[in-house]
Amino acid sequence: MTRLTARIDAIVVPRLDAVQTALQSPTRNPRGAVVVGRLLGADVLAVLLTGLWSHVVQDPPEWLTLPTRPASLYQWTQGAHVVLGTALLPLVLAKLWVVYPRLFTWPPVTSVANGLERASVAVLVATSLLQPVTGLLNTYQWYPWPFPFRETHYALAWVMAGAVLVHLGVKLPVIRQHWRDGGES
Image (cartoon, rainbow, N blue to C red; front, side, top):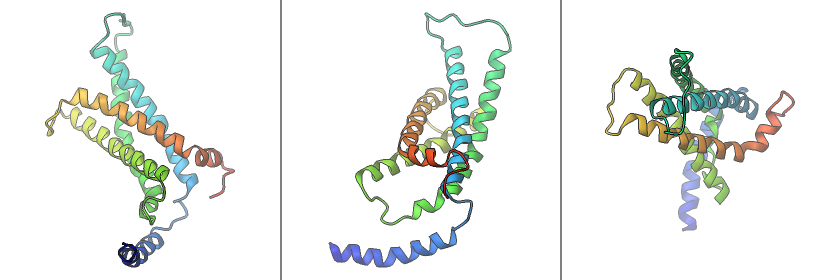
């Protein structure tokens, strides 16, 4: 088994080193990840809140009396949801661009905690890409998938919110260090 892992390392490590070298950029640093992450986090929160409002308006609980004025409130919140949800896509791609070289670290998992972090990031990336794409296709009323849009979009929003919270919890020390300009790159 040790010979097999040594052979894999001999093949993979030089290639990953070459990829790391090719991807080096002064903007790919923890500070950049935190800056883009703040924008992304604010956008995710706004989209989640407007989406929850939309869900409550479309399917209100019996005990809740919704305001009837202003009459255009739902239009404004739904418009904000669509615009901010569409803005998620370029923000997620920008965040992925900043942290992209981290995908090529070797070994891919160094501990149980690191494995859980990488799994939570995989869930976060998947939902962060799937939510705006399905939402955008919904604006065109095109549903090329076999599942109901509203229920799935709502459920994935909670999965995404949970993945964001896990990611924030794991990355809190880095976020604290680089929140302001004072953090080291």
